[in-house]
Image (cartoon, rainbow, N blue to C red; front, side, top):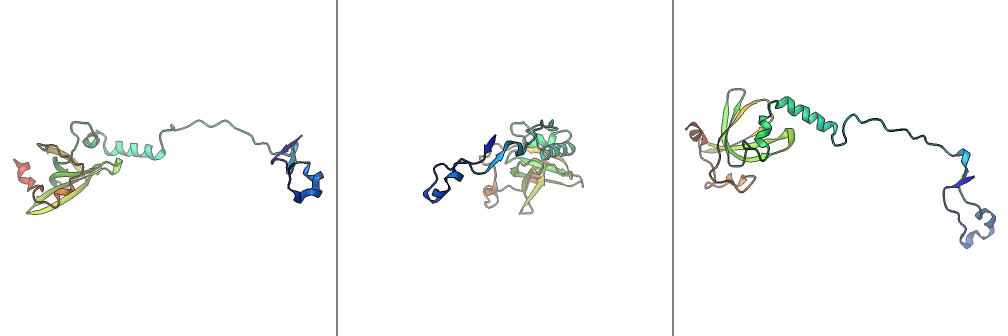
Length: 176
């Protein structure tokens, strides 16, 4: 008839010696008819799967909008033949009819924010340019040539400081 919330204090310390009649009963008892009853409902059906989040769905939709053919995604997808690698010579054509050619010194794969950095020497000065892969201002990306020997690093930042490793004027090489 009664439901206990805490254990009874049958082995009470000597402080409560005069209260044995109170201690024989359990503290904090509620009659069963006064207890709150919680209704349990069945769960609603899922609109999206457990593995997908709303942000992931939005990112996929944006990737489809920015890269409907999928050629940009293949440029950074590891394992594909047309994948950009550090050391590749690349020419980037923009929608304002300008182009920039350079050696890929870094690739940062980060979903919609994927970008790559190109380095070239223009009139004897080292020039670096970072491009967002999914930017609408990029019209096309052309792979001019691959290095003879594959680079052993993922980021070629060491090229910046040394004349031994630095690239020359790649515009002349691209025109050939």
